[in-house]
Image (tube, rainbow, N blue to C red):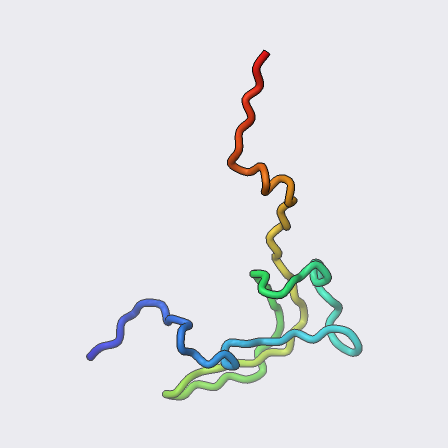
Length: 95
């Protein structure tokens, strides 16, 4: 039976195979802008620049590694709780 060309589902995949860590500080890259505002379970987009130093392909999988030269974070702006509380509510003002 042929496999579907649909996007691979993440359900059932080994968590450690989808995890990546970034280390900053002593003898490493400087912490990117926005790093101190990050929270657990927050969704971010990470743009990493660097040079590929290893590529591996086999019938069981594929991988690559690189030496990072820079990193940028795109973090969604945090919403003001007061603004969120009033979202979707309209106030009618009469004269």
